[in-house]
Image (cartoon, rainbow, N blue to C red; front, top):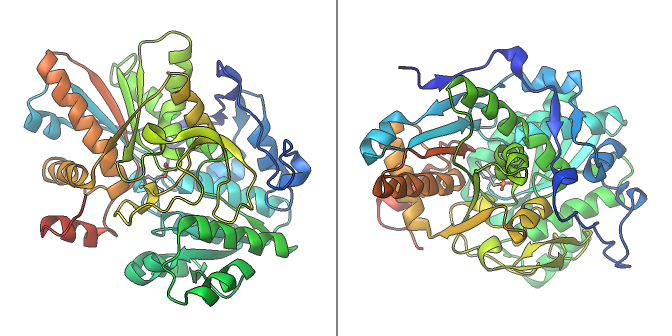
Length: 432
Ligand SMILES: *Cc1c(COP(=O)(O)O)cnc(C)c1O
């Protein structure tokens, strides 16, 4: 029996899919942080190359992927679509569970799908250096890898507590040539001010973003790069869903019944689900499901309003679900899901009833992760395990109702650099 669909290298999508023109309620523009007026391209130019600013705002449905980007994506794309037959058997479900395996990239997650084009467009506009933030290190490692491909310097501000507790991703970033400092750092005014008050500050993602932005604004040779949330980032991730559609067709599936992704800022979820969101808007019977941690419940409990993306209020304000830009989530293991806001596109879909959201506590998430590891063999990242949990619950619900439901979820990354989290779970040290 075939349970794995692998496309030829030539079948990587040649264009990214933009959902913006199909949204029933149009996206609202970002607002300038100081004036509160809509931010134009010139306001974003100190941070991003013009090509990405255009992608951020474009009404075009398809954006061609440059050949130089495809050349690098080909290192690991197309990624496999796998049917989780062993998990299905263990659950005794009539449901069919498919997952798209984004863990096969060099950095072990979906994040290089956007790190590569972001590095490319900056290089093409003559920018030799990028600054960014990273929590657990997944985004920093993806951008460091991309920087190595286009010969760009990458400066990473890594949340201090992760810098101390998770040395391996730092080593990965440095192996690819990235420079990593713990945030708060003394490289920026924001960092210095925080350190003056508390030299042992554990840092946060919002604070690290403030430092990376300050770095980029102060230096002519440097742009800023963000790993999630923004429209152009979500756009780059749509290769996931576009490939999955082709692969499902090869597997004889016209349309899945439900498409699931873990949601931190919304990029891997958007990547797998947006091509299906278009079908849904046009009347197809496909459900889209965002999965978040109960301890950082942006979509299930946040407010829908304009908010800053960082702690210091330096980013443009975006209309999105938010827990407030000063919200400090508890230190759960799924570091990539600890963000106060969410992609405006994902937020828009949820608000308009086109996407559902569910939140899980950490213990239930790891229980699913271990069940997945012991059936399918793969050890998922703690973030990814949220999607695994939801896929299992969908399959159990289908069993109860006797439905042959087709479930597609995004396997956003592997957990082989997160084994201390598994150690905590297996030894009863995990808090919910
Ligand atoms: C970063 C990350 C996430 C969460 O980020 P999104 O932008 O919401 O996709 C999920 N899974 C993995 C493996 C990640 O590295």
